[in-house]
Length: 186
Image 1 (cartoon, helix red, strand yellow):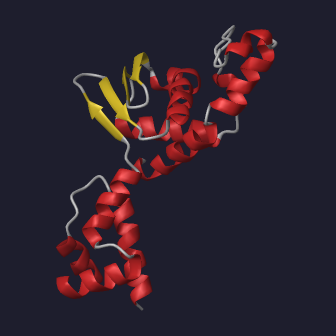
Image 2 (cartoon, rainbow, N blue to C red; image 1 turned 90 degrees about the vertical axis):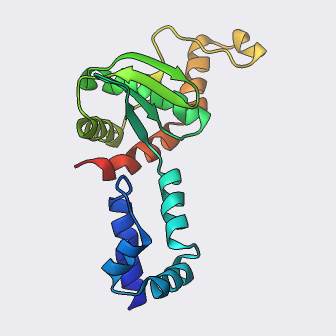
């Protein structure tokens, strides 16, 4: 019985991460007193309820902040190479559909850009593109030959490009993070 109630709470929390949540609201939804809800939730999940909410927000953090007009800042909270893949993914795979312009980054922290679509359309378009299988080589710019090691200059350019696309760009991590944003689609 408790398992279903706590799972319902977790589902509600995940669906409402961008709204103000309180332990009282969650306990009322569960039909428990606040004290009892705290104990049941912590026993089932291993964390106090509001600590769980905070942790889930941090783990799934995607902050898109309007900077006025059509300018936004995106804080995707991914690793360095997933961030690099995401930057290229937005420019190359999503740029035209989003009406993306002026993408500037401070790796691996945030991206700043203007776009012609709204917030929900942004998430919808990016998630749709991430669901489509694509070759990581599509995220390598034409004629780009990244050099990471001093010996890369002695290797054929096409091998260096492939090594960068398949071995450095974390497309799997990028896709996983983007697909976790599907809950923001309205």
